Length: 73
Image (cartoon, rainbow, N blue to C red; front, side, top):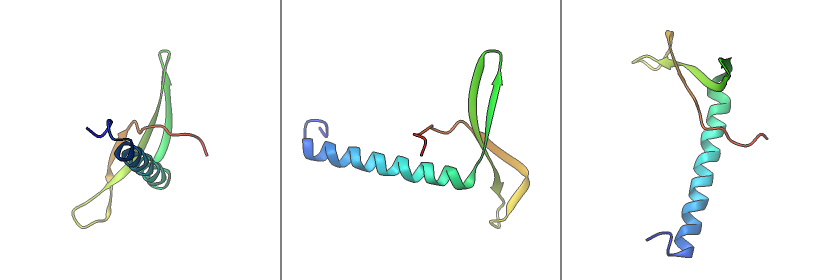
């Protein structure tokens, strides 16, 4: 339905690009990035400490994931 309406498709595309840009800004400031290599594979992992129930950083726990990679600035 959206794809058939050029105006709505343009709005959706713009919203997606804006959301991606916001995510990349957040990743730049909140994650420590690691390049992990081995056995002919390479991946970039973003890691950060999680917050505890009071909103403080819990240094005993870390979450890591493979974030979407955007363009270099």
